Each structure stands twice: as C-alpha cells, then as structure tokens.
Amino acid sequence: MNTEGLLAARMVRLKSSAIRELLKHSKMEGVISLAGGIPSSALFDFDGLREATQLAITEQPEHAFQYGLTEGSYTLRERIAELCRERGVVASPEDIVVTAGSQQALDLVMRAVVDPDDVFVVERPTYLAALQTLELAEAKLLSVGSDGDGMIVDELAELLKTQKIKGVYLVPTFGNPSGVTLSRARREQLVKLAAQHEFLIVEDDPYGELRFTDERQPTLFELSKSLFGHADNIIYTSTFSKILAPGLRLGWVIMPDWLLHKVAIIKQAADLHASALSQTIAEYYLGLGRLPKQIETIRAAYKKKCQIMAELLERELGDVLTFEYPKGGMFLWARFREPRNCADWMKKTLEQGVVFVPGEFFYADNPDHSTFRLSFATATEEQMHEAVARLKRAL
Image 1 (tube, helix red, strand yellow):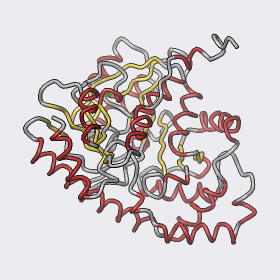
Image 2: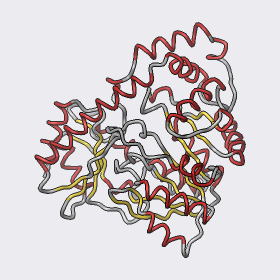
Image 3: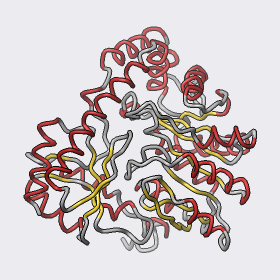
C-alpha cells in the first residue's frame, strides 16, 4: 500500500522525545541513568497510597469505577483548590480541570489557543515536551535567553517592540532543565508586559513544592491577581507526579472562564475525563492529611541528593565545567567551559555506563551543544559517586 500522504503534515516534522529515547539506554544492565526527570520511587508514600486505594474501592466503588465529569471530581477539585491556596494561587473548584498529568494540560491548552503560525515565546533552554506540544499545535516558536535569574525578560520586551505574540510558556520555579528560578523583579516585569501587550502566560509549576530553602517566590498567577485584580491571561498548571506518584497520571490546570469550557470540550473529545480510580485515590489521600509530611520528606531527600551531586561535580569536574546550583527541583544544568558537543560525548559516557540528556534538545533554536542536564532524583549516593567517576573517565 502506498502510504505517502496519509500522515498529517504536522506529524512529518514531529520528533520523538529525546529523553524517552535515552530511557531505553537507562534500562541496559549496568547503566546508571542521570537522564530522566523521574521522581524517586523510594520516596513514594506507599502506606498512604495503599490506605487511600483501599478507601477508594471500598467506600466509593461506584465513583472509582464509573464514568465521571470531564472537568474532574468536584471533591478532588475542592482539595486541589485548597492545595493551590497554600501556594498563593486562589481559585475555585469551578476554575480547575483535572488532567492526565500536567503534560495533557499543556496539550489541551495549546490546542485551544494556538492557530497555525501563532507566535509563542519560550526561554532558552526550556522543557522539551512543551516544545513538542507547541510544535504539534503548529505554533511558530521564538526564544529568549535565560541566566541565573531565569528568563531574561528584557529580551522579551525588546522582541515585543517588533513582534506580536500569542503567549509565553515557561517553568518559572526550579525550571526544567535549568533548575533556576525566575526572580521577583522579572516576574513582575513579565506579568506587566503580558497585560500591556495582551498575551497569554502559561505558567507550568510541577516543581514549586520541591524547594530546598524557606524562600518562596509568588506565582505569576498570584502576582497578576495582586497587580491587576485578575488573572485572565494566566494559565496555571501543576501535577501530582512529583509530589505523590506519577503513575496516578493526575495533574490540573487553572484557567479563566473564557478558556476553561473550550478546554473541557477538547478533553471530552480526547478521553472524556481523567481516570476516575486515580482521582478517587487522590481524593482520599489528600483527605488523610499525609501530603504535607510527604512533601517535606521529598524536599529533604532531594536537597541532600543535590548537595552530593553538586559537590562531586565541583570536586571531580569543576575544572572543565560549570553549573547553576538550584534551590529546588530535580535537575542540575551544566555547561563545559570550553566548546564541546555533549551529544557526541554521550556516546563515550554510554560506553562507560552512564547516561544524561544533552542540552541541545531543550532549545527551540540556537542550541548550546556544550550544555547537558543531570537529574539527581533517582540515583543513590553510591550510584552518584560511580556516575561522576564514569563521566570523568569518558573525558
């Protein structure tokens, strides 16, 4: 059969996730993976999840195993609203749609707001799967730089003098892949630019709870409410994957009314609703009151892992590379002091039995081939010592 022309044109240029491809290598015997942004299963609250699951299937089997509302269980949305209020994101259950992870939230939102060739701005570097979602929505991607204080909003301001844009996507807190956090001054500048030029901000916040210090920056959603009394152009999304368990496949998105019902229609067409069983488990888990302690456990563990990884890199490889020291999240973003193609180098590190993600995959344009991302979340201390030794040998 001649299949030429059967695929949609947008699929021809869509690439598979580099990270998903690299995870194949991580399954090889003897390979230590510092690649995937995967939470440590050793930190999952299995006792709490077991109790919540038992309650879900004994107390509410008619809900756990039945079709549900497209927007999600109202009880779960109430509890998500309570969780978000602690983050400074004040929203009602009616403002929330429960999704199959925050990745689906990004997909639904981009399908709802992006027409072909609408301009979306991302930072360099940015979350790889967000680039995929925007490309699938046929957006035109432009990028601005970032540094230790996050997106360089002055570059965006210059761009806006000559370019009309539909929106900005960013992970402002403990970003993926950079690990950096957008400063307070730049947050205010970005929110003001969005109001002035009437573009959307998609605020992706999967890591905000994973902070290593008591410092907390206000969300862009919160700042918009504070400055203008509304957040009509801010879309806030988050997930249970990094603070509870990714296997539940539960995230959520908070949107203004003008967008929420359109997104709900797209979700109806996509999958009707997020898993009713997962939602019921999450309802009961949140009702048990175990999440705050669980988050504290994760924060402490990741802080220690990050310190170990950073100290090893500084001691063993500090003469050849530099990196930002994150204040939270799951990633270290490193750059060689002299130009080096990290994709080529990874062929050598694979021979040594360690895998990471070359930085070039996180750029919409003008990739920096001398950069790479390391995740410290899943490796043990022993594995990190061995992984850094293998990275050094591969040089």
